[in-house]
Amino acid sequence: MSPILEVEYKEMSKWVYPIRVAIEAKPVLASRDARWSDGPLSDLAFTISTRLGCLPDVIRFVDENLDFLGQELDRKGAATIDRLIRDGYVYTFEDYRPVRRVLVGVDSFIAESRACFEHLADFYGEFMKNYFDKNTGNEAANYAAIASMASSPVWADNLKNLRHKVLHERSVWVAFEVRREKSPPYEPLLLLNWRPGPLEPKDQVKFQILRDIRDRLDEAATKLRERLIQEVEAAQ
Image (cartoon, rainbow, N blue to C red; front, top):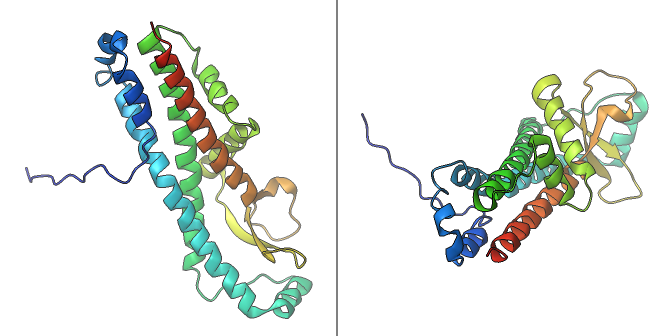
């Protein structure tokens, strides 16, 4: 068998480190902490930290390619875009690689965000059981707990629904809302309906929904870490 050269685990999120520091400062939890590596906690900590570390790069990848598309629309000028809209035509980009990269990046963001959400919920339940013999409830209860740790709980439902649609039902496509009075004048939009013709609100996903998911996921991860550290520090 050929030797394997592993990559050092660096440049990822430090999400779990403060939790580990708090645990190691509590000798009363030492016997329970011995089970950290034996059960799922260490694997969950690894996947949460890895995904939180990768998500900013996924977001940057999407933003960079959206910028390329927006710059081309700006170069074409308002008169050209208005004529296309008036005549009912679609816009054909000179280079479709940024379009495809946006689609790949958005799919990755949605899948990785939902996976991270689920792992945060699993970590919460396993952590409370391992260190404090507390039953946080079933999977649905743990999901609800993580959702409630962000200031706007609707984000978790949006993430769940988007994940289901793009992994099981449809592929997103890229469009732009033309709004002359605002900046940017071409606001990117995701479509869940590829058929030509009038679009209903359910066929559209504004990037603001993805931005809210990003912010609320970060918020929930931070709040969960704070809550777990408080539990550890209060241990007798």
